[in-house]
Each structure stands twice: as structure tokens, then as C-alpha cells.
Length: 519
Image (tube, rainbow, N blue to C red; front, side, top):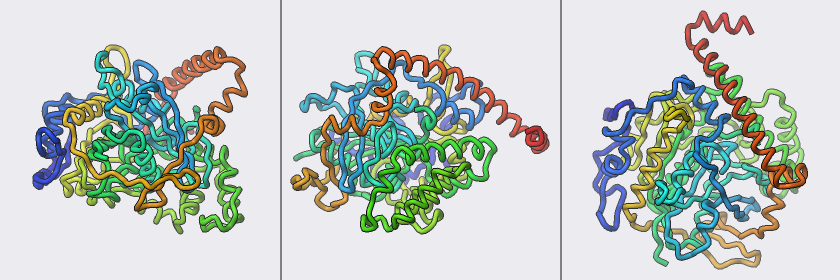
């Protein structure tokens, strides 16, 4: 089945078996995924506008670097209120809610979007802010008028690790625990979702449906794995993924032996960012007995820590091989990467899943995208733009930078909001045990216990470090503004250098040879 071309966007989707699918609406009956997208998301249909990247950021690498190092394109800073939960293995998960006061009333039926960020990300990531600003802006001010909660992965965004586990795409129990927690006080509110990848590693009842989730990059991979694991019993009615890393084996190989910028900049940045998390939380990995169920002795844990903390040329693959894979019980890096690649399980997805990727994504290049898998499953739609990078898609309008992917995301969730989706199965909660932990009835590794506010503040590494340096809130505000200005200046200088370097590297093999000899 050949892909459908919509302007400069190519759509990969199987629309033959559309009868039982779909986006099911209680008021309008069933419609196929392609029908819904054509009606509700014109940006990804034949009537959509062409994505034209800004000339200031030529190529996928420049777009990717700027999305991580540059300032947010949001017109205002999104504010959050934080709550934390403990899960059965002792891990701490921080949830950032926005707008902060929008969750005070239990009578409010406004849908909630659950956002899954990318590796080293969080609610402060520029791409998360860019998406949530219009989504949570009141309808009276031209926004979508929705609510959102950002799922900060373990150790990310200033939260302290309280268990010897980081995050990876197959850790779906954390997402299941969050769904269980939200349903405990939002039993009749539609839940949507959104997901991504990169961040700034160096700068610091009758239930209404869980309508959709959004995931960016690694968060998109985790979301896809969850949808495949749950299949027909998924609590989510629809999902939108951005820059999904479908194939971690191919992604790792590209970072290890691909383009110069990928090998020498992106790969070390991701490795150093994760090492920073381990260094800040090393006690969580070492203060364990040999009977804690990790399968690693104290000597093995110390050896893994030493490899990570003292490796001067750490990369994403070396960090995963030396640390994440052993702590998660995998005997080799190859097995871990194969197990966490969601392209292998896309066939099991049984709710509408829309994925937006760019062909020039340096982490998930066009040759690695799951075209055949998307066309084999009528529940999955893959939209591919020729350019855009990894969570980039920067355009320039009215003298300012904008991220184009925000437009189809807003159209998608606004369209779902108008459909009044039918309810899907929701997890059954057991009564609290002696530790006040509430488990999922059929999966005891899933559960939550609310954490007191004082304990949350003690786990917030960002708050602790700031309060020890600055004596007053005014000094903290001044420091934040100066930091933003410095970041903006350095980002522009760095992107200009990267852009010109990419042009030289792509010119010809002879120019590449001269460039390397020069350095």
C-alpha cells in the first residue's frame, strides 16, 4: 500500500479495515482514524499548509540542537503546581499540574492531557512549554482551554531518586500508576496524552475515557509500549506521539557511527546528562543489600557506578550498556535495545495512535521509521515531514520562532474534545494497605501513595540548591533572567556554528576530508 502524500507530508496508514476502528464518539457513532484526521487535523491532511523550516536552521541537526539548547517559543511561561507519589518499588514520581489552580474543584470536567517528555526532559523543557502554552490557555484568549499534567520521569527535572531505578521505554508500570492515581480524584474527566525526547542536560463508577496521551521521543516510545501491552484493555482512547524513537538499536548505531555532530555532540550530551542524574543520586544505587531483588551484588553495583562516573568519554550507548541494562536485569546492550524498541510491538496497538516524525531526524532517521508496521495496523498513522529534526519543526513567522508541530497537536486534542469519546476500561483499585499504598487489582507492581508536601520539597534538588545559594526570591528572579539571556546568546552562537559545520560536512567527501585535517 503506497503512502498518501499531503503537500510535503507523507502519511502511512492502513485504511482498508476501518469498520471497527476508530475514534468512537458517543454522539456521532464510529468514524475511521483517517476520517477523523481529515476533519479535525487539517495540518496533517491534503488541505494542510506546507511546513517550511526557517532558513536560520538548515538541516535536521541544527533544528535538533536548537530545540534542546534554544529558548522556548511559548509566548508565556507555563506555571505548574507539583505533587509527588510513591510507587510500590519505592520510586518517587513528580507530577506537575497546569494551570496550578485548575485542579482544585472536583466538579470541573475539563479534559486533562498527560504529557510524557523525552530523555533528560521535564515540565521546563522548551518543547513541553511550547505545546502546553496554547493547549492550556483559556478558550476566551484563543487557546484550547484544557488542563495538563506532566509526568516527570525518575530523576528528571530536579527530583531525587528514592529507588535504584532510572527510566526507559519499557517501564510502563510508572505510567500505569499515574493513571491509577489520577483516577482516584478525577473519576469522570477525560484524560489525553502527549510525549517527547530531548532536554537541556547541561542547564539545569462510570468513567469517562482516558482520551489520549502525548509523548515526545523517549516518552513517545514508552507510551507506544504501554498501548501495545494493554491492547483492547487500554485505559487510553487515543494518543499522539512526536519524534518517536521507534528503533533504539538503529538510533544507538546512528549516534555511535553516524554524522559528526551526532557522534561528537549529541551522543556525549545525552551520556553526560544521565551521568549527572546518577552522580546526584548515587546513594539510591549503593545503599542496598544483596537481597533487594536487583540481581546485582554490592560489588557489581559499585563497579557499574565507577564505569559511569569515571568514564571521560561517556555516551548514550556506554551509559546504557554499563548501567541501565545491568540494573534492569538485561544481560547485554543488544537485548535491552531490542526489547525497548516499540516498532516491534506496534502491531498490538488497538487504539488510534498518530505519530509525527521528520525524515531528517538525526536520532531516528528516515530509513529507520516503521513504514510497513504503520501500514499493517489500521490503528496507527505515521506522518513524516521531509525536514524538522528531532522535536524541532522551527518556522519563522512575524519575526519570531515557532514550532510547527504545536499546530497539529492542538488540532488533534481540540478535535477529540469535541467528540465526547466513549469510555474505555479503567483499572480497578484495591483499598489502601497498611502503608496507605493503593494497588491495581490485577497488577500489584502498579500503585501509588500520596506524599506529603514537606517530603516533596525535601526531594526537589532544584529547590534545595537554589535556596542554599540565594538569600531572597528577588535574587532568584534576577539570576533566572540573567541565565535566560546568557542561554539565548550562547544558543544562537552555537546554532550558527553547527549550521555552517553541517553544510560543510554535507558538501562533499573532499570537503569533509579537508575539514577533519584542519581540526
